[in-house]
Image (tube, helix red, strand yellow):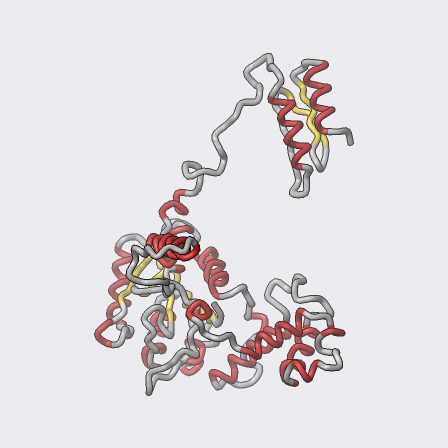
Length: 377
């Protein structure tokens, strides 16, 4: 392969022909009246820049010469759906808070006593970020993660490992390393996730819901990088075209509305009952669904957030069963966001999963009632 700059200069300057030979990091090619410089991700950037500088200095003999063009990626060229999408937790209020935090930090760093705000710091509560408000990290998962990242000789097999880590953390790390097949935690795995890890999830669901052992099919479990990724994947599959919509609670975590906007789907809102501890009202669900259908919307899914975000309510077993039945009757995919299932604080409340409700209603085996439970953020 010849040098990009020397090749382009030779053909352009010496022959003055309209055929310009360009060399990329992955191959060579010749085009008539067009200059193309194709670089791979690991291409030689400085060489490419020199080659392009040589090419643009050529006095072209016709209208096909290289001309600077409008940027391909700009506010005018990006998706209209992306421009109209709103993600409130990182919107204007959060941006303003960042600016104020910068002012506070700047005034402190410059040792000035001038503070134009009646406070000294900002506590961010726009997102679920417990560590940012000084909640201590849970020790055991951190210990297991540390052992997974360490080479065996410095971690699980180190002579002093038991002095630094509890035995159960060492045992768990050893099990997980074995499941990974000797690969590090940064290696690619099965697209659904490591099978042994999915088996652990299946076992957890069975114990949580009082289901018989082996009743949860491990092949129906997909591990994702948090529930947000799973939501986006499911929404992408659900929104076939611009006529599709998904029922979402009001108020709700804005990921759902933002994702629907991005995909060009319809937000079909249903209101939680503030006077009943933000509970669920079936009459309101029927109203919302009927109104959407009248407007020509093909409602394909239903989002349930339980315990609620941001409302924090925990639905009763009856309310959960009513929702499961509602989705079954109307052929709606139920996306049950249950990431806060351990956050039950009010006396008398008890978390009931949608899967348990469907099991008790005898709907688990009914194929038209699709149930997806999200159990990680």
